[in-house]
Image (cartoon, rainbow, N blue to C red):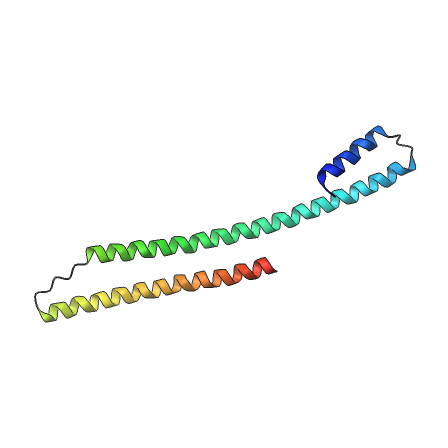
Length: 127
């Protein structure tokens, strides 16, 4: 039953004689219809709230990924390889390895978060 149907029936009952036995039955049907509409609205509200939470989680993961990319880009722009000898070059190379290893770990965690989010959101939608 739709809200429009409930309102139309209610208008018909207002114009009918309240002593008619059919009016009582109609009121009961309207009450049942109203309760069903209220239940459907609650189900939709819960689904929308779940979707909102999932969207916020996704947005946070994407925001983390964007920050990771911005940081990596800044590091690549500011780090120039200026070596005066082989030892200095090896030191700079080690520094870059450590830096990019940390970045790779961070990227891996973000990717893992995105993967887990996708699985959880799929299960949430299915259930």
